[in-house]
Image 1 (tube, rainbow, N blue to C red):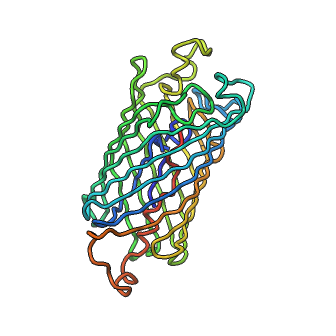
Image 2 (cartoon, one colour):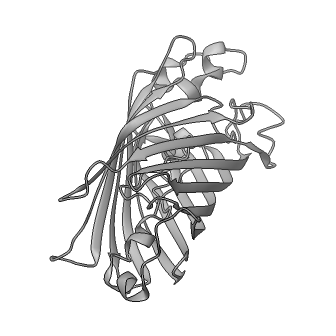
Image 3 (cartoon, rainbow, N blue to C red):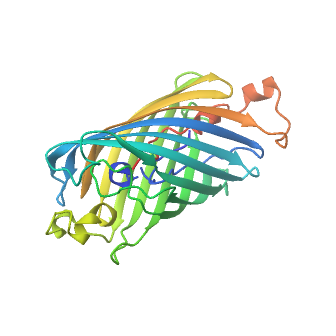
Length: 332
């Protein structure tokens, strides 16, 4: 399962690039074999009703619903090097007493292409721990409105570098696995302010049967630089600093959730997850972040000869589900 470890994509999920964050950040420790890959279609429904202040307290500022559809392709260039590309489409709606501007915050859905994500990851180590460094980036496929509660993203680029680590317990808890990810995010600068970020994602999964797995998810972000909510003195649309607040705020978040995946057949899996913001500052509190998707695994003519059924049965077949995108990824 690809950690589709999903920023308002950054505001909500940490996010695309945290959350799809703003990219679509794929954080798998395991990579597909040469010539093999996965095509995924993911639907996301993100709902928030509270804004987070500098001290972590929450205030009501209206209801924001963000919907997104993310298509992603993960492909093994070699047995160790994999590339991922993701294309998100988002739509947002705001209902409340403090719209940023009309018509985008008028209570109707407004949609746009979002931020395309590109990721390269290399499986450096497989024993005793799987270690897979990666580099990734996201950039807007079109310029969309970012100054709105219902904006689908921040209309800005991000560059990320980090490492994925994972392990499948072979003796103790042989049906369990975990994978974690650390990423340092270089954000685009606005008004000479560049709020770079540290992101930490974690997942612990357990296979109830050969086809059905459940998992616990944790996503977090700590921002260096940027401004706190109290630093914006004039919160009006005509103030240049306020118009950039979603891009330059010092947003910190900690989200918890869970999910499940089911293998319909050897090359087809469905999955779902739900996230909630437990703590955060200077952003939006995610009340519920629902992700539902399907992944189709495929082989190309230049893939290695396929194993026999007996070989597959004796191999770590659990890996197919572990590589599914389970975390929120792409909608800002």
